[in-house]
Length: 259
Image 1 (tube, rainbow, N blue to C red):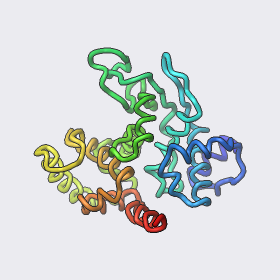
Image 2 (cartoon, helix red, strand yellow):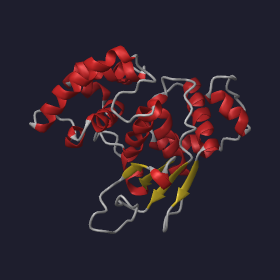
Image 3 (cartoon, helix red, strand yellow):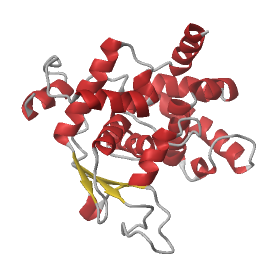
Image 4 (cartoon, rainbow, N blue to C red):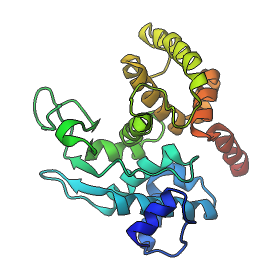
């Protein structure tokens, strides 16, 4: 599939092309490492692979000093991009030119191994505009442990989704009518207060600001949807509407089928 065809598919101007050069072992890697993909039926697995292909054809995956980028890394980055927008069939990630993988946590100058190197993922700005940096070990860990409510790849691509309207404010206007903005932010204020008091199982980092609350709770939504629905039903409802995905219901169906 050519780059232009891929762009047209993402923009919804052309139907997806079924035939593309997808190595068979890539499907095996997704099956082994990405639980979201594993839960899909065969038709949707094919669509997931197509959308990963579209992302990889328009976004470079680069390694920083000391990092060798493997097929698994490319697929985990692509999966991180596709999962949050799975409910939007024509969503393009043309604003992300490159994702740079670093050998560990880094500081705001993207330097590893320093006392202040505590960042595992960051959307670039200024000279790094249009780029994203991720710690390679943390990217892999996010998918290896899909029960801890943490996934740095998904977290950073949720920020990209949030920024699609030009402002990273914790409310993705591109996917939700503005009239819902005020109720959402009032709800966030209430939930952040709970986090600050330690009265919730939401990651403390979510209390940083509304944008981080949206990203942190999105990680929770995609990793532990049934738990989120049980413990925070209104938050689950908001995120389910944002993402147009009812993951808790899917998880329940899978549980019933496995009995």
